[in-house]
Image 1 (cartoon, rainbow, N blue to C red):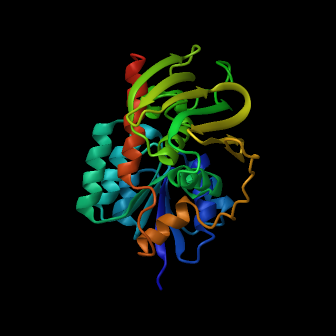
Image 2: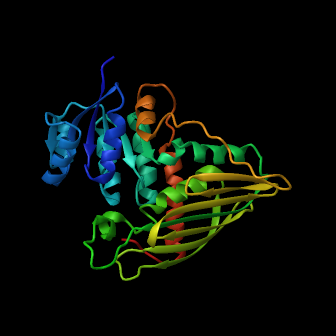
Length: 322
């Protein structure tokens, strides 16, 4: 079998995660990279021993000159839409880092482009492949805690280290499309919507920029069509990473604290589930979908839900990210 020839748009931090996972697969060969920074390209190639691959400073040149099957997009958020559109129109499969786009209008257009192209488009929400979140989703779907009544989801991170630090593209609105909510918060929104399969209808939010060009902290209350309520807390100025979820139902609850899960059923002893080993990830599943081994695990239609919800939060706060 010939290998899937992969190119990268963007070779910064998250691209290294994708490269490491792709290079574990015998079906894949990284053939070309694009980044406006020659330094970033060199670091990427050196780390993975890719000195003989093609490199470009402009992704259009890579699409024209490199012989590729698929592209991984790891660029700033607001660039995703046009880059993914061009990749699909060039007849290539695409894996897009989160968020898929920064507006629901763009998301819908991109989904249509993918359908017309007949190529695989997947969005890189990695929690869909992690056993703890698969367990939460399946436990809720199986009715083991009864109908959901409330959820809290919180992420604390040292995302903003102060104004004396160099501001990365993540705090440049026309590149980031928003602040902490649009960046790391996108994963928490993903978990909230994917594990519960609930439909948000009402949102009230408070945002704080703390002197940054983008929002740092976000506190949001949510009502779902199905009757449950939720609180979403995204704190970008925290002393350390901490991620928690509590899913309460009519017969029990699931508590997640930094990777540790406890299942509580009313009137019974708590259960700490034994979870299986992780067998796939966002990159392996993308390649498997290309090879026809299974359907796309995180399709554009789901990523659109995350984009829509993010818009609801910003609109409720009267906030225009960019």
